[in-house]
Amino acid sequence: MKHLCKTLILLVLLSSLNIGIADTGYCEPPEEVKHTFLAEVTAYTASVEECGKDDGITASGVFIEEGHIAMDDSIPFGTRVRIAGLGEYVVTDRGGDITGNRIDIFTPSRSNAFRFGRKVLEAEILAD
Image 1: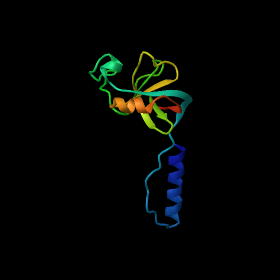
Image 2: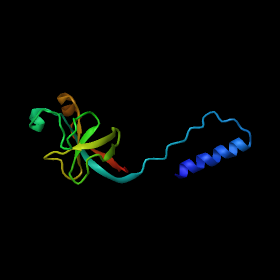
Image 3: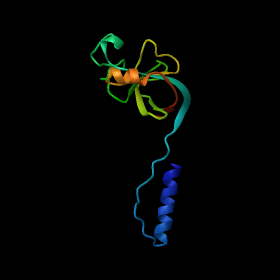
């Protein structure tokens, strides 16, 4: 809200001075981070070998796709998580070995999952 107010005040001030404004769009406020932590990050596929089934349906009931992750059941489905250097993801799945500060990122390729390996990265739980 502060950013929107500052933008509006600046626009009013500039227009009162008869200064032309090329772009009158509003800036987006910074995303609120609820919690930052170090996570052990791995990657997985929806293969029978890894999941015991191959229907592509996650624990939350949605079809798995890139941008989805598995996390501990203390993190609600639908939670947005930003992983340093990788981007933003949505929690839609669980895993037998995914507990505590573990994150498992879905990838459609088994070779990509193996190539990704195991990393310790900073992760942020984002506000709704």
